[in-house]
Length: 225
Length: 356
Image 1 (cartoon, each protein chain N blue to C red):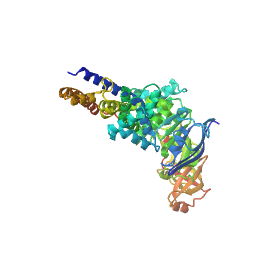
Image 2: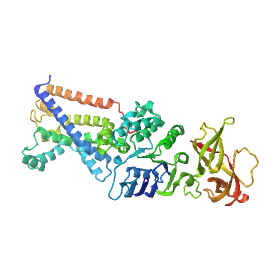
Image 3: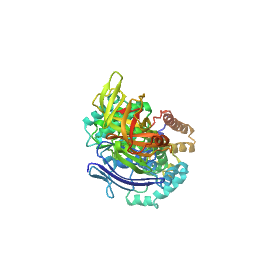
Image 4: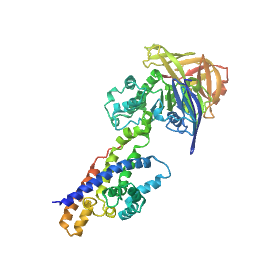
């Protein structure tokens, strides 16, 4: 069946996708909230920046991240001066890159979930003595739950499926940056088609299952009334 | 000191709110006007849901807003009822009622039980909002606003989104609120009928400004009310049920200046009621009229005359004892009868609406 290095790659991929999803839940939620609530001029530019990874070739994103996080880039110099070394070709470098790459998959479903809640439940909560923060946790989160589930599943699945950015930032270090998609590439390069088949099938089944679950889940309207 | 002083100035594209008001600290005050008159915006300013560029709001001696102060909505001791009940979909009825209760320092369990009893929703507590009818939802919305133990209740057209049947279902509860609540209520409405039933004080608005403001009975009897009421021009009289004629199923209500017979609706003798007499149901005669099917004929004196919406019509205010009625006549009949201030007339009233 799957070789040890395959299992290692799958575990690494799962870890990368899990951590990326957690980070993006924390980072993406306030961004999505801002985008959903604001009527300011920067809403357009911010929305465009968030959506960039949808259209950019992963190599472009990876290239710029490599420059910024490399020894001569601003982030690289910062991490070096903090004694952390540089991020490219490390697992955490992959996490950072994935967080940028998967950002729209977290932010956009959340933004539309927040938008569909509307202003009214927030106003109701305020007239019932709830502070804005209290309102977020006691009203917005429960009403936006379907949006959070969708956003997390999409982010996780999209991170599992990335390849180009990983290759640019992480290279191909077993146990550190060699994720499943890179492992398949390696198998193919080495003409190990049988191994490539097995791992590719795992990926295919995983992706299909996730999407099937998403599309068959009965959508419950998240409305205030 | 115990009232509400509000001064707001708010500029939006195409709309300006500019009001300076002193509202009574008790009873029901109706903010009345056509849609777009600014009444809901004024209510939202009182609640802190809108932040006017210039404003000062003082509630019973406490400043909620001035140049240096801004009390956010969640810190104002208000209860707010929205036009659509806007219940939280993720909570059941009890969860909705408890939401504010848990967060309010002034709320008491007793208040919740009273609110549940007052609105008759005890049997709905475990239900989810989407399983309730529109009328039930709105009753829960009102109870939820009361459960926080507010010092003032703000209601934004709580009946507007409901059909006539649901309105009839809720109005008795609102009338109970009017009778039993000790806190002031600000009630936004565009319905003259609701205002006549519920309000003690009326603030008429038009184009973002207050155009008339005063106690209900006096204000409705004004002939120069600058707001078009059309068929709804008429007065409200405070009265008591004097006697009930069980043979003919009629009740006599006594007001300061006379008595009127109306259909008996089971209201007990001695009970305080309101009667609404529309100007279109009142006609005048110079001589005492021949017996006719009209039961209610009162003696009065023409007090003043004013324009009606239509150039062919005229409004006549008649003094009857300490009370006043308004009659709608055609200008021709007024001229033929020689109607003028000071003239003694017989007032015939075709229909009287009794409101508990």
